[in-house]
Amino acid sequence: MQTFLTFIGFTAFVAIYSWLKLRKEKLSSEEGYFLGGRSLTGVVIAGSMLLTNISTEHLIGMNGSSYKNGFIIISWEVTSALALVAAAIYFVPRYLKMGLTTIPEFLEKRFDKTTRTIVAFFLIISFVVTLLPVVLYTGAINLESIFNISEVLDVTKEKGLWITVVAIGALGSLYAILGGLKAVAISDTINGYGLLIGGLAVPLIALISIGDGNFLTGIAKVYENSPEKFNVMGAKDSVLPFEVLFTGLIINQLYFWAMNQTIIQRALGAKNLVEAQKGLLFTGVLKILIPIVIILPGVIGYYYYGDSLYDNQDMIYPELIKKVLPLSLVGIFAAVVMGAVLSTFNSVLNSAATIFSIDIYKQHFGKNTSDLKLVRIGKTVSTILAVFAIMAAPMVANAPDGLFQLLQQLNGIFFIPIGSIMIAGFFLKKISAMGAKASLFVGLAFYILSTFILKLDIHFVHIWGIEFLLNVATMFAVSYFYPADKSFTLQDLHVVDMHEWKYTKHLSIFLCVATLLIYILLGRN
Image (cartoon, rainbow, N blue to C red):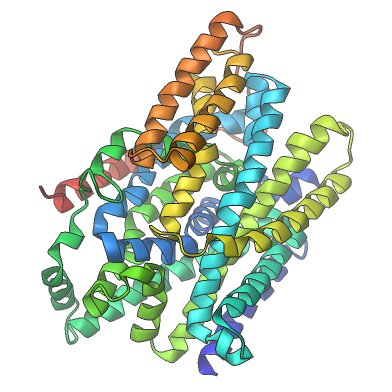
C-alpha cells in the first residue's frame, strides 16, 4: 500500500504541476500546440530530450541486454554525444534559420512536395509499428512486476499486462492530446531529472549494500565477479561488435539525434539558438552519464542472480528494483518510470500529430486551414494512433535478443533510408528529387529483404552501413538520368535569434574527448 500511495502521489504531483504551468498558455495556435510557442529553454529541452529517448525500452531492455552481454552495448549511448555535437553545431542552426516545424518541411525545400509526403507517411508508420508498442509493453512489464497487477485483479499475467498497456496508453494520450508539446516538455523535465536521480539511486544503493557500506568495495566485488562484463569492445560475434561504430551505427545516431522529429522537435521549439545549443549539448553530457542508469544495473543484476534469468533477461531490472530499494522509494521510482513511459509515448504522439497536420493535411487538403482546425486534427490523429499502438503492444513479447535489440532492428526499417536522403540533401548538391525518392524505396526493400526475409548472417548494424552506401549509389545513379531541376538555397527567415552560445565549441570538444576516453579506459583486447 505504501508503494502504491507514493506512486499515486508523485504521478499526481507531475500532472498538477504541468497543469498549473499551462493554464495561461495559448494552445490553440499551430506554434503554441506543436512547438510550445517557440519558448523552450535549454534545461527544459535537455530534460525532455533525455526522457523522450530514455524510456522503459532502455531501463528494461538495455539493462536486460547488459545483464546478458555486459558493457559492449554502451556504444548505443555514448556515441549519441557525438551526434548531438553535430546537431548543435551544424544541423539545428540551419533548421532554426529555415523556421521549420517538421523535418519533412526541409525535404520539400530541398527536393519536392512528394518526397516530403512520403517521408511523413514513413515516419507515422514507424511510430505505430516500432517505437510505441515497445514502449508500452516494457512499461507494462515494469509496473506489473512492481505492483503485481495480475494478482491484485485476480487475472492471468498476460491479461494483467494487457490491462496495464491500455491504462498507460490512455493516460499518455491525455498529456499529448490536451496539452501539446509544452505539456509534454514540462512533465518530461520533472520526470527526466527524477529518472536521473532515481536511476542513479538503484546502482548506488545496490553497490553500497554489496560492499557492506562501502561503495568502492561494492564496485570491486561486482567487477571481480564478472570482469568480462565491463569490456566495451564487442567481439565480431557479439550482440554489438565494436566494428559497427564505423559502419551503420554512426548513420543511425546522426539520424536519431539530428533528424528525428520526435527528438529534434524540442530544439525546433527553442526560444533562440543559444537555448537550442544548450539543450542539445546538455543532453550530450547526460548521455555520457546515463549508462550508470541503464547499463550498470544489469551487470549488478548478474552479480545477484547469475545466469538464472538469461531466458527472461527483460525481467532483471524490475527484480533489481524490488531487491535494493526500500518500499517508499519503490513507489516513487515506479512513478518516475511511469513518467518515462508516458514521456516517450506522448512525445511520439505529439510528433506524429505535428507531421500529419503540417506535412500531410495542410499540404494536400487545406493550405488555408485555420490553426484551430489543425490543432483539432492533430488531436484526432493522436487518438487514432494511440489506439493502434495499444493494440500492437502485445505483439512484441518474447523478442529472442531482448526488446531493446528488437526495437533497434525495427527502427532500421525507416531510419536509414530517411537519414540517407537527409544527409544527401545537406551535403550532395547534385542529388535530385527523383534520386531521393528512388533511394527511399530501394533502401526500404533492401533492409526488409536482408534482415527479416533472407536473414543474412551479417549484423543488422553492418547492414545499415551497406544500405547507406546502396542508397547513396542509387541517388547518384537516378540523379544522373533525372537531374535536379532546381538549386537549393538555405534562407534565413529570422524566426528566432541566431547568435551562437559562447560555450558551444568548448562543450563539444569535451564530449568528443569524454567519448574517446570511455573506449580507452574500458576497452580491452
